[in-house]
Length: 111
Length: 112
Image 1 (cartoon, each protein chain N blue to C red):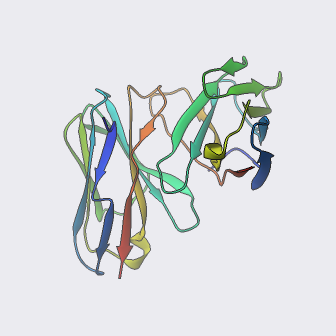
Image 2 (image 1 turned 30 degrees about the vertical axis):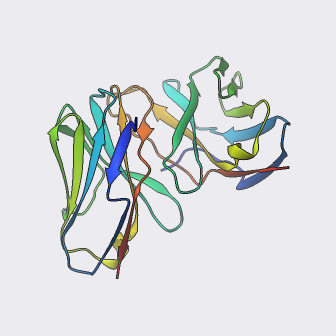
């Protein structure tokens, strides 16, 4: 059911920016892109979401391409605590709020 | 302080038993969810309740029965447990059906 494709794993040096890509080539006009992460043994944590425009909050930035077929989550200064599985999800802004999680990207932040 | 809390954190039991997992949220949210994460780490939605009313039921076996006594609680009862029920079960909540979901830390269910 997942409508997104992500690389299975990525490495990033501590203090550097982590850029996590996501392909969602079949996204519809009313579908939002959400990013969550799951740190080992914890529940998923909401990071950011967007529809068309780029978004930024205290955790990350979300860059969505103009055709909306792909997006990139940017952690500007990765720390060891950012090591986690990052999930890119698309969902329709309807009344059901169903999230379909794919396999995600395991981000390894290294000292 | 815990926003979404689940009990128990670990549950080990035998095949055929009946067990319940409890979930409570103190965020004042209207919508609550149950997810299952299997051994391959895929996270799948099972149920969703909005203001105590079932709105999502993702073809889950009827051995699984959610119950929402009030909008701050969504419990999951499982009858006749099977080996394939071994997984981590996550509860989540959101302000409404359009807002991001907040997850608990999961209940690790192991069937012997």
